[in-house]
Length: 417
Image 1: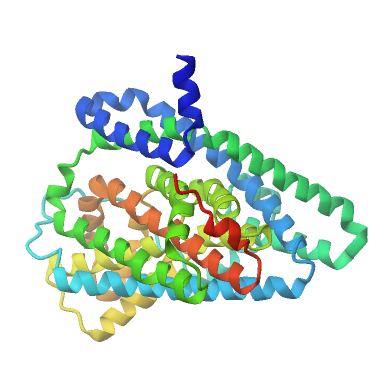
Image 2: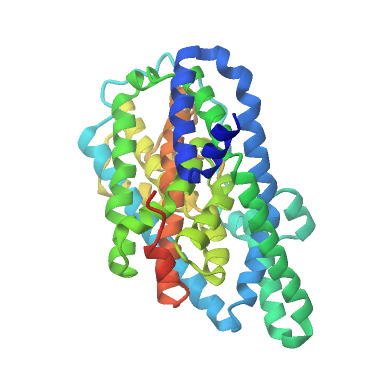
């Protein structure tokens, strides 16, 4: 028993997670719905990583800003990251729309048997922007409002830079806090294979692969679109903008990708993403701790692609003709609603109302579309979350290269085992 445990923990983490993922799928498919008895293990893992998010984002971001030594660099890093995030989001939407038009997943779909789902009201862009500034920072911490926390952390780090030596003690404390949170993240990630096993087993046991029969063409468009987004957009950024080899990047990102696949949450994957960026890809804290939390909140490549695809799917199912103007409106609206989307499982489905409204779809029709897709959404959500965090890491890699904040020896030596 001791040798088996030693062999298990000596194995690199991504292999353990992958083994757990495969075993979970097999066990869940065999046991069916009775596997729900182990759901608490997956929930415990998700709670552990969610526990880390708020303190990890705050202390690492403040520490990262302080490590820049110049407030001007914050604007440079942030501006470049946001621009790249917008570019990748537009690319994802374009890929999704083109595939949906070519494959036509909604043709012949009968939505009459779907149960309407209650929808979240779309949030106005003005309200989204105002919500970035917290009225009470402590309330933002309590509510895990990442955009507000990021804003307050940026101000805190900038303030420490401006007061110079007077804030050295506090700056050192934040650096120590950052090291502490990353160490705790490493401890929690040792539990990841067990959590992943339970999460995948429950998904497979309750949904099963047969769910794809009902939405085969929609699933095909989403999965193919996600693969193309990684290959054509995100790998392109690494290869041609960062001028770095793609394979070490993919190897360095795989632990975070596996966690993203199992949790279906960009924010829940953030601790693993930060760890992969610094330890596997050599991205320095100044970039990793500022670009990645921002990406987990505003960069939703997979979500944008998915919402665009589902919009075309719905139009085809209801026989609504679309012209070039409609496609442009879909693209613009999807970009806006994907920014700040709650990075939790299936959140994008409940933001469809704002996009479907642009093509003249009624609230009743929108509710039918969501009700039809919701039972099968979790597996597709797992796939698009992988795209989200891969996009975060690709942008962070490019920005780190441009800012000379990447250790290329670490990057090129990304684990091959």
